[in-house]
Length: 302
Image (tube, rainbow, N blue to C red; front, top):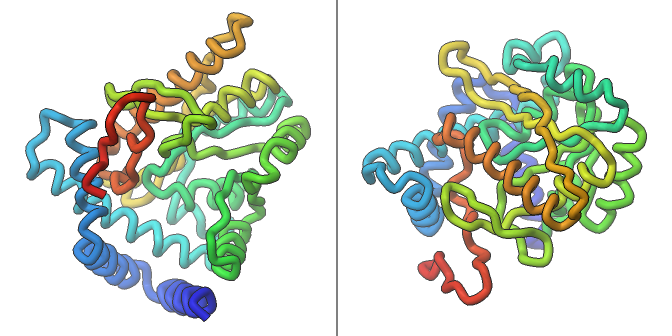
């Protein structure tokens, strides 16, 4: 019953927001997210703590303003997600334009598939959806939701433009098959990782357990790694889907050292993007939760 009610609430909310004019939907969503942050204070506490790690020289006022803007951008992305059924090639450019697409196309020419290095920046759901609308569908790494009905519903929206999910239990075989066929695989690489799935590298000058998946795949397949992310362009009043040049990989022949060094490079690239758009990253995630052996926990207030 609980799962059915969760699904019904999500279905009604998405359908309702999806038919509203965009400005009205954004205003309603922004109020909802602000209320959520008030009702769940630990989210705001995590965000403030993370911002103190990342920007120790900032004032609390600057951090609070960043959280306020972050909440707004999260709300706006939720509205765009609800409007996915209305997106098509004739109207997508009103919402999001592509920058640096030559970098993606150059990587694609190599014929080894493309790994998109991305994170929870700006409108990450819109980025992969829009790229498929533009004619470049991709596979995306997904963690299934506990609610199976809701998971199916959410992925139905994500796949309306031709994208396909790759779940963790099927990831290795499907990713390799996709890359060997010249396909595109997007991986969110900015979240906390368990020790057995990652390595510790600097992220905002503090060790953070970071997935080694992209490095292992790139070194094994030769697929180029292209940073890609969608950010809100204030001047243009629309999103920009930005692709940067493919990352130059370190390949010394020492497998574990190469994995570590390339993971370090990917983390630094992600950090630099966040520094450009600090109010568009999801600071409510406990990014530094996993600690090196012997270190005390950082989020002891949770």
